Length: 254
Image (tube, rainbow, N blue to C red):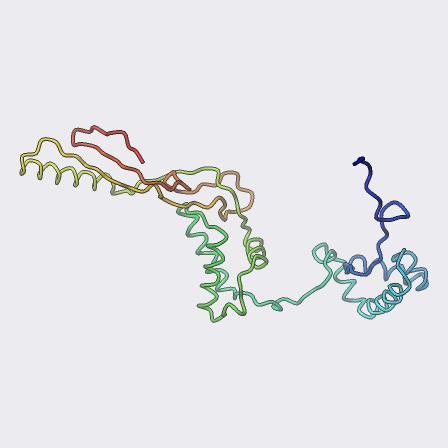
């Protein structure tokens, strides 16, 4: 089969013209249309701002322009702000079901508590904890679903974002040395009592320490993201360890 260009979708050639049938105008575009309509006729406005629209669409846009002019104060106010000029619909604050300020701050405190000790906070953890706090506040899941839209607004509101970990480390408990000393003293006392020269210790242990998420919540702009772990974030295997009281450590196997 000979290779060649695929046929054009538009027989006339070039990009297909916008028919203005499925798009919703931004407040900035509405303001531009109203400003043009203030000094021109309706036909000139339709020819300039909705060029290429068919007869039925032009009639629809004619009614829409009159509707925009009726609510010109709202359009002018929305188009004057860089935050709302690119929006297509405005909703007053409190329209959507959101958590209260107290519950929102409680969730921030929970996130910061985990960050303080180096524990990563995944999106699933944040989702489940938000549902938990919402249930305690009397909002069932039918009213608050902790969707990704809410999570995005929550992160933006408190200056957070999901970051990939760049550093990983482990910190031993403060009393680990004391526990080791007590175990050695007890073991030597038992060996002396039983007349044992060499003691062996075999241990079958899973290498399944922690499942560390790839991303965690942190402040915007940070360059280094530390998370605490055991050094193994996704290994799943069983390991056999063997050693004796003289410090000989045999090669482990799994």
